[in-house]
Every structure is written in C-alpha cells, then in structure tokens.
Image 1 (tube, rainbow, N blue to C red):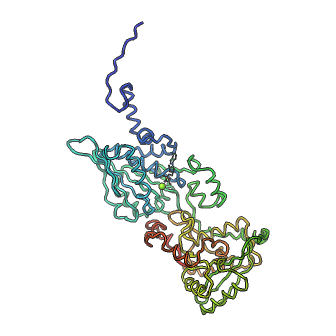
Image 2: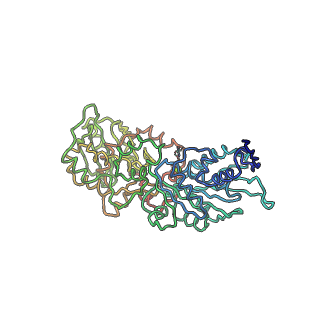
Image 3: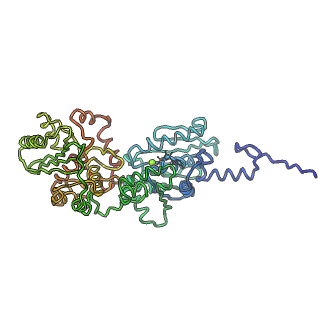
Length: 511
Ligand SMILES: Nc1ncnc2c1ncn2[C@@H]1O[C@H](COP(=O)(O)OP(=O)(O)O)[C@@H](O)[C@H]1O
Ligand SMILES: [Mg+2]
C-alpha cells in the first residue's frame, strides 16, 4: 500500500527546524512565553526547582503580587529575580522593570552580575541588550507602528528612596514589574512609593527577618491579595545537608537564627529572648561540667569603668571560672595600677588578657600598654566575625557565651552564685534587626529601664569569647583595613534605613 506523502506546510521559523509541525511550534512558543518555563526553555537553566517554577508561575499573571520568603542562599536572586527580569523585558517589549533591595549594593553586586551573565548567554549586545550600572535596555527587533520599542530595567539601592517613586506602566502592553529583593530590610516608605506606581506585577523576596515591617505584614495578614511562598533549606538540594546540620548543632533547632535561616520563619520577637537563660545558668551551677584546665593558659577578660561604675576582671582557666574581681575607682590611673597588680598576682600574660576597647577603654588600653601590658583589644561595637548573623561583636560574644552555658560547657565555680552577674545576663534583651541579624539591647536603653551597665557580664564574655582580640599594632592595622567609609560600613551593617530604627537602637558603639 502506498503511503500518502503528507506535504508539510512550511512553518514560521522558531529556530527549531521545520520538522516540527506548526501547531507544535505554536504550542512550544506559548510554553516558552510562560515565565515558569522561561529559565529552562530560554535560558538553558535545566534544574529549576518546583518551588522556583511555582513562584515564577504565579508572577506570570498580570496584576499578580507575589511574596517569597526563603532560606538563605536558596536562589531567590540568581534564579527567580534574574529570570523574571529578562522574561519581562523580552516578553513585553517597551515595558519597564524596577528593582531594589534592602541590603546596600545588593542590586549592583548580586542581581546585576546574574543579569549580565544571562544576557550574555542570550547574545548580549548583538541581540539588542545594553547594560549600564543601574539600567539595562533591550531594543525590540521590530518597529511597532513605526516606533522603536525599548524595554528597560532600572535598579537602585534602597538607600536612594527618591528613586522608588514615579515609575509608570510602559509599552504597548502597559507593563511595569516591581521587584524588591531582601525585602525585610527595606523601609516601609519604599513600599508605599511602590504601591503608588501601581505595578502590574510585584515580586517581594527575602529571607525572613524580625516580626515587623511591610514584608512581615504581607505574610501575617494573609488577606488573599498576595500569593505567598515559603521555601526552607530542605527545598533546595544545592544547600548541603552537612551545612544545615552544622547550623543546627551550633545554634539548636529552636534558635531564632535557625528558624529564619533554614526554616524561613520570621523571628518572633516576644521580647523574652536573652543571650543567657536563667534555667541554663542554674543547670550549670547545680551540675557543673568537670574542670578542664590541662593544656589551657590562664585567660582574663577586663571591663574598664567610667566614673564610679565597677571595674571588673574575670579569670578563667580552660572551661572554669577562677575568679571575678571587681572594685570601684574614681581615678583612672589608680585603676590602671590595680589592673596591673591583678595581672601580676594571677601571673597572667598580656597576650592572654582581653579588654574592652570601646569608649573609655582606649585610654585604659593605651595606659596599660605604656606600662608594658599590651593587652588584646576587643571592641564590642565592631563588626561581628560572623557578620551575616550578628549586628556587632557584643551580640556575637554574648550569644556565643549563652550557647556555651546552654550546652553545659562552662564551670562557673563560686561565681555561679553571683546574683548580680546572672541578673546582668538575663536582663539584657536580644532582638533581631530588620535584616534578621541578632543584636543586644543598647546600654542606654538598659539605663532607661533603670538597669546598670552589665560590667560583670561583659568581663565574663571577654574572658570566654574574646578570641580575635588584637594587640595594639594589629588592632590599628585592622581598623583601616577594608578601606570603606564609616557610612558604607553602617549601611552594610544596618541595611539602608532601618524600619523604626530597631537596629540603630540596639547597635551600641563602644561598650
Ligand atoms: N535550581 C537550582 N539548582 C542549583 N543551584 C541553584 C538553583 N537555584 C539556585 N541555585 C544556587 O544557589 C546559590 C544561591 O543563590 P542566590 O540567588 O544568591 O540565593 P538567595 O538570593 O536566595 O540568597 C547560587 O549559587 C545558585 O547557583
Ligand atoms: Mg539574594
């Protein structure tokens, strides 16, 4: 039997070869136009996760409002935001995308490089793209009604709030997409500007922070106006299980950092979080761990007083507190003499002494050095070692110490019954700033609540967690090290402008 030859109609070119029937080409084109398929079909990113497709699928719809809270490093910026931007520019010729982010330079340093990479993959300038700082253009290859259509993507940092305002839908399809990355650190005013622009698509993304602000409210109100998504670290196969386990082991499963970083939950600030918990303290007092002093050098933490406060020195050997010495001195120089006498009495070496160099501490450290005691300088107000988690060194050291107590690793010795010491630890609140970093209640706030400066607790955390403290020369070198201005550091640290000044209030400078 003769097979009837079917003559294929020549299909419009999709660059796919003419063996694909026209109806299928149309279907493919339709599929490729869907945002959820875009990374796979147009950008060659094969392994998009189901949640990434779901988020993009929701954003595909005109007038969609999509909010995504997700674990750190889940692919919000590189996959979701970047794909959405390119899709919007290509799909809606002449349209506009506006992008901002709460973390200083996040747009320029995170989103833009991803966009650049994708655009290069699409042929870059040869295919109509041009990239500048803060603006990307795409010229549609065909004129429409004799007019050239240019899609644009604008990026700005939330520290330039005036740029949030005054954008309009554009192009024949009247489209404006607004993307806010790290939304937890974006001041509410920017969201109000965003709303006034009446975007046709809105995407807010963030790892969750504290329980306040616009982004938090979107999830809390859950009023049906937003499509909301929550993505944990377990939904992201590229996030290593060992890393997750390590965080769990370090902080405990219930720790606010773990709840936010891994489970993508907001940190509920009920005001009761403290670095050290009374119950944990009492547990190590009634059942202290075995003294472990072998192979350890005697170490001290010093908190200097200003005008009538206590001068405190805590001495520890290995895991065990050997002494808490305190006195009051009106005269600074007398205090220097007393510290040196104590250093000698305990046979301490300067390199094993950690001292607070904030405020008054500079003078004291310099005076000690002049007497031959170049102690290690620790500034409570300085950048934390793990600065993705803590606003400053003070919060880092206090919380680290609290964790050691919780795990029963500290033998407090007789000092365990010092009520004042315990009170100092448990009356200072820990909270989250807008970016979800942990911070301590400021000393001025404590004072306002009638609570004295927690000098004994400060000396204690210095003795146990002062590691990283630097001798004079190193310290001075480190100060100028990263060559950024104070303002840049602050913006990095605190997000552009903190909602309600939460972080600023908690970020003490000096001690
Ligand atoms: N679907 C995926 N498959 C593999 N790796 C991914 C995927 N999505 C994201 N990643 C990787 O995750 C990492 C973190 O992405 P990023 O966008 O910076 O995270 P976030 O913005 O959520 O903090 C990137 O290195 C990226 O390559
Ligand atoms: Mg990101």
